[in-house]
Structures are given as C-alpha cells and as structure tokens.
Image (cartoon, one colour):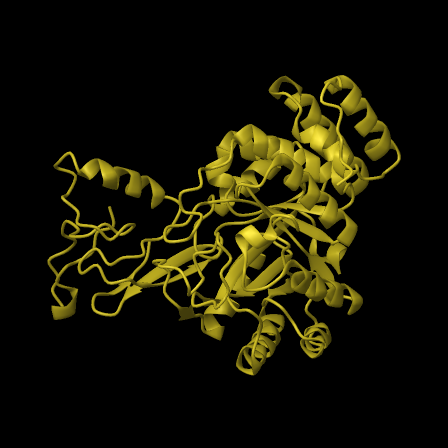
Length: 341
Length: 83
C-alpha cells in the first residue's frame, strides 16, 4: 500500500488540486487523493459537492439517466453476499419467487412511460442456467415488441458463451457490481472471489456491451477501503457506476450494521465523481434511508447524474414522481432514448 | 400496520380487521394498544420503504414481487395483498 495522505493538508488545497486535475484536465483523482476527499471536514462538504457537480456538468452534461430495475427471480440465491436478503443461506423473510413474462413486459412499459431509458432485469443467481437464459431471451423479444426502452441485465457471473449470447440478443448494458474494495471483499462474500467478478466484468466489456459496475458502501469498510473501491472501479472504466448505501436487511449478517452517516455518504458521492469524471454515476439502493429527501437533492447537485426510478428489487424507493419532479425543479433534463443508442 | 381480511379463505366480506401479526417482523400485533406496540411502530415506519413479508392474518411468509412502480404480496392461504 503506497497511500500516505497528508493528514495536515488544507481543505482548500485539496480541493484546488482536485479542481485542476479533474475539472480542468479531466483526469480522475488517485486513491490517496480520494482518501483526502473522504476525510475532508463537514464544513468543506458544500465546496466538495459543488466541485463534483461542476465536474459532472463539464464532463457528462446536464442530462440525468433514468432506469427501472426488476427482479425476474427473487430469493434462493446460493451465494452468501452478507448484505443481501436474497441469499438462500440466511434466515431472511424474503421468499423465492419468479416473475412471469407478461408482468415483466407490463413493468417495462410502465417504466418506459416515466421517461426512463434503461430497464434492468435482475436475477438472484450465481450465474444463469439454460432455463434462465431462455427466459431472458423470450423476455427481451417481448419487451422489444412492446416497449421503447434499452434492456439491461444482471444475472450474476457469466460464461463467455453467455456473454456472447446476451450481446447477440441486444442487451445494451450488463450489471455486475464489485460491491466493495478488493481488500474488504472476503469480509462480505466467501462463496466467490473478487477476481471472479472482475472476470465477468471484463468479458462484458470485451463483448461490446456497456458495463454497469457498482458499489455498496457503508458495510463497515474504512474510508481508505472506500477510496480503494473508487480507484478500482475507475481502473475498470465502467460505463455506469450505481452507488448503493447499505440498508441493513433482517436475517443477513449485516442486519445490525448501522446506517452510514449522511455526510459521509455525500462525501462518497463527490469522491466517486472525482474518481470517475465521465462515468454515469447512479443513485441506487439505500439512499432514501441514508440521505432522505434533502440528501437526495444534495447528491444530485454533487456529482450524481442518474437515478433508479421507483422501487428496487425487494425494497421500495421514493415515489417515481418525487424524483421526476425534483429533476424538473433542478432543471435537469432526463436523458432521451436516442442519446443512449 | 398491514391489515387484511382474516376470513379471506372463507370468502367472507366483512372487510379489514385488525392484523394479528406484524407484516414486517411477523411477531404478534396488539393493535397498538400496549407498550410493546412501540416495536411495531418502528416496523410501520419501515413498511413505508418495503412491502410486508408476513401475512398479517396467519404469519406465513408471503411471496412478494416488487416492480418499479408497485408491489404485490401473496399468502398461500389468504390471497393477494397489494398497496
């Protein structure tokens, strides 16, 4: 580990350095610089968010990308991701359930009607089997017939053949999160490795699909590990990074982990933007609890340029209209479909 | 509190009755009348951001499907619940 951030550095100096490197040169901050951002005092938070917002506007534009997500197969997952209520290894109240295709198509149409350009189909699996792949193919065809929306998938770890099939079927983007820093990953998942996740991510990119690779913060990782994750994501160069905040789920190993502090969450948003100036940075799960309404607004003015509209996979989000109205109020247009094709 | 018709299986039409069980934690509900109901006040708050997982009539875990703009929960004995 080479990080040795200067603990005495002046916040203004840290932000001036970040401004020159990220805003003006378009380069992401290094891991050690991200630690400095994450350690900035509360009174420097408004300036940090302002810088992140300027970076987002300069390098991404004013548009906000809206997405809906849905679970086609809920619960019963053989993996032990310690944050997840869908693991079949924990005593979670979430029961296994499959969504039928007509309901999936109906949800895609409803999501498209909100102005969303992405509809992500998610399955709680280690990786897809033939049955699931066949269902996904059928679902993609039906959605394409009836809804005007890009289709994304999140089906766990893939084989090369499955990557090729999804690309051939027109899957626009594939989600596979790193979740946490490499150094913390074994504390969170023991049934597969960080490297296995990276392998799928790289195959997705090589096949020409957009990679959506996200983070879940607030799981007990240190600030240094949070910076490590941001730097590792930046090195992977995903098209999109969904940023989740732990919502401790009953029955999971992390059920007693407290919610992360809202200011730490906002600093993390700014840090991720300063690590990845051109990446789509999406608000994902847990923001309602961690940030509330005010924090949601601050994040959108602090580096976020995409949202998941409405509900998540097993929990509920803010009403879709609340977010859509907020975007209007903030004068942030929703990215149009043709711009993402 | 998640309320359902407790006589749904018999086709009764008497309307919703007080829940027997908390939809969030599955523990007994007292209708908010005792000190222990404070526990379920927290559950009620949590149910603003997640669908009920337990049938309020029989405490069975329900099959819950969340979609971007809605959710439904189905008890094998007491039927479908939606917002």
